[in-house]
Image (cartoon, helix red, strand yellow):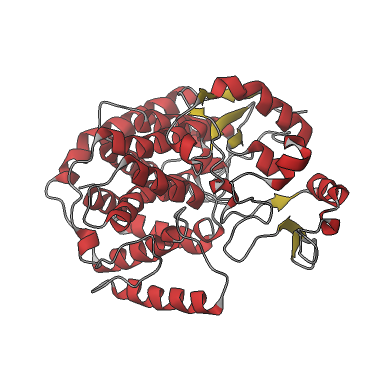
Length: 415
């Protein structure tokens, strides 16, 4: 049995053009059904796969399995034309469940699961294709067959380790959604509103209030955040040195998630990343050569204002924030044990990181829509990337919030 699946109160669109991006640099976890189907397909007897591992085991105690990858990070079944070998020979239903579902994403809540899109797919990031409503029946069928969203999600606490209750969590998440979708303000201003709202909410105990009192308090905090946010933009101050170091550490991790960044599994690549990490800690002089997709630049150049971006260039990033807030994805998936406030702060930090990556990708030329779509792909991957969902990153986010640096980072890189 699957929870009722509902669309978000926003328009999302997608279609597949067979680019194969979803098959590069991603880890495809295999459940028992996936493993059984792959064994039945007898790939080890196929001349093109003889002597190659099809599945990779992870861990000794209660092992998990994933699809094998080639040295350049591509799925072992990805064909040169961008199509899947399993799909070509056995059909869609023969593929692992994750592959069948992508880019559909279910977000289990209290009494339903929201259906949204993973924007690592470039056409999903561009909202290009058929309306998501046309895929609703397919998503329900695959969810039923795969046992997805079979039970309500576990609500995160609003802040810290307080009591977890759906009513309080949803009231706060709904208020954040309203702020992220408030088109009276530019995206940078909406994110600052959300950060100031979370700062004010940090020490409130909503579970001790009746529903009406709680809603009234949240409305007051939101109004205060909107009224006071303007003062943070004048003057625009750069982040302090310690905050800049934490920011660059995170930026290096996001840079490796860029869709054009193919990670080579070698000691040479590991050593290059170690050297890059030391350079990022200093944050001065030439940027180390990390990948051919990034032009030569300096750390100082990455601090220069981008200037006003065309609305079409900024739109994929705004759509990512709106969809993530509407689906509650940032709070419900990928960050187990995080509070709602910490999860939103991590999402807010992704905004200046996105614009830093845009500077890095474009160098001296003006950003194009395609550049932003690639950046959105990296930000989407970061939502569930283990290094950006663990305790170390949560400590970074909390430290930046405690020092009042998150809003400063958002405003500085939003120039």
